[in-house]
Amino acid sequence: MPRFGIILAMIATVFLTACTATDEAPPTVGASSVADQPIALDWKLAEGETIAYHTAMTPLDNPSFELNWDEFFTWEDSSNDEGSLADVANRIQEGLSGALSDSVDYGMVSVLKPNEQGNVTVLMILDSLDFSADETDTTSETPAESTEEEDWQQQFTESIRKMQQDMIGTVQLRGEVAPTGEVTSFYLSNRQKNLLALFFEIPSHAVRVGDEWEIEFDCLEVGAGFIVKDANRLNQVTFSEVTTLPDGRRVAVLDYLLVESISGHSDSQMLANMSSATTDQIPVSMQCSFIGQGQFLIDEGRWHQFVGEMAINSDGFMMANSVQAMALVPMETVPPQYIGLE
Image (tube, rainbow, N blue to C red; front, side, top):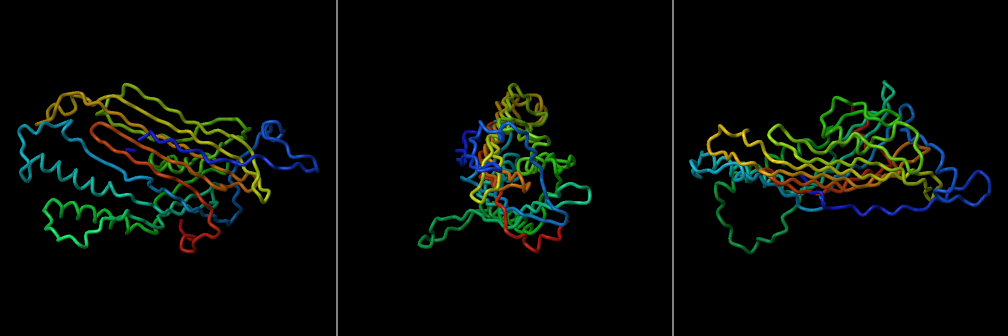
């Protein structure tokens, strides 16, 4: 999973210029009645209305992924001959590394519309895929015969890409949020609930400038094979200020700071009866962070924009590192092919 070490430079926000109903000078943030009054940040979609957002999850570097088999297996009674445990492990590693080390830009479209239950249906649709290209110029080189291992890895990578491309135009996440902001889709997988909460959960109660709250976001998971010795979590969204756009619309600026980390070691007895498996305790650590900012239109009840950066890292048996830029950008019109989806 991806490394917590990258902190997003927060997007600069403009100062409050909203004027009162009279011709008085505009108040300053923190000293005005606006900052002291509770504000309900609710989704406000009219009956029959549908809105859409470009939903970006763009890699900022080439993600790395490696299964560290040598930490768990000694291979003393196995060779690298075809069919051996070591050979199978190496093939899995080669295939996964080739498939997961590509930088894939997932172009999503999120469609929101009110439903019969009075909630807001959220459909996250895979609209496009952009695979990282190999920039190496090999036109002047003499083609080399590929090995069996290289052929296998290439086929594995191509099969995964084909499956991903076949999903273009399909709904990848289907959930609901209440108009007051809380996620109502309790039945979703943790990963999907994380995305839904990150992009579309807003405080279910009226908030003032300076208030802080948590969202339903839990990034890290481990199984029974790992013994956690230290765990830390900061889940904080802050209502930092009220400001206005050049066209006069009021915006609530929300700052996101979500950080999780765990460390420990493997259960030495988990693989005790497996041939070639070590009984040593293998150190394991994981970190995840999201830092971002959203601008919520107070009177219209929807995002003006939402941007942030997600970083995940793990060390131990699975060594992975990735960083993604994440954003919501309103679309002027909903793509017609997505209007009728349920």
